[in-house]
Length: 232
Ligand SMILES: [Zn+2]
Image 1 (tube, protein in one colour):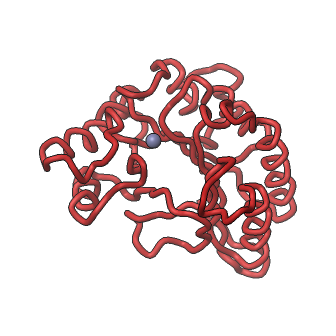
Image 2 (tube, rainbow, N blue to C red):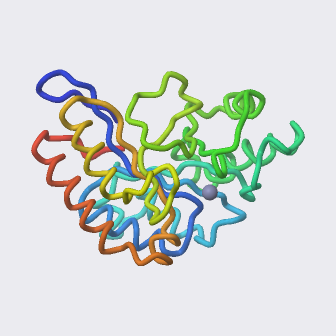
């Protein structure tokens, strides 16, 4: 959710985690530790999370984690099978992948929560795919854009800010954390939208858990100073 700071600047801060890996449970624990709002984009037939784990992230149930994380996390859809390029699918196939993932995840959650956010696998989309996402009933769709802190002009093209990744050409020789601190501070000060995104599997593969912990600690401490609401 977006919020206005004491100077009336509009701010939105969130994390999004793609695909639905077993390590998303560890990720959810870390995000809960610092109370950072997050969306977990899941492709049900590609993900290795089981229903029980997805329900736990979504905040269903009476476990301690579920109670503490209520309202902090949301489940988003990421197609059924994570096709490498949605643009290459026929209308029928794309509708099945896109609309099917929404229906599947909503069914899994006992129709108690609507899935309104979609994320294009590998950020690949065009006008046709955007239309299918809209027709399927999604309210917004995330891409894999880089270093963006503007609010989206088109809700079906929501560009995030920082990919938690050790080596991306878009970072022009800097690390994701260096960019992260600069752009996060800018959003806190001047307003804007900061979305940190990545994959739990990559955080593990590139040994980034400690760095991520440090960065989320910083986000939390700055969010506290402006009384940022801990709700997705
Ligand atoms: Zn993905």
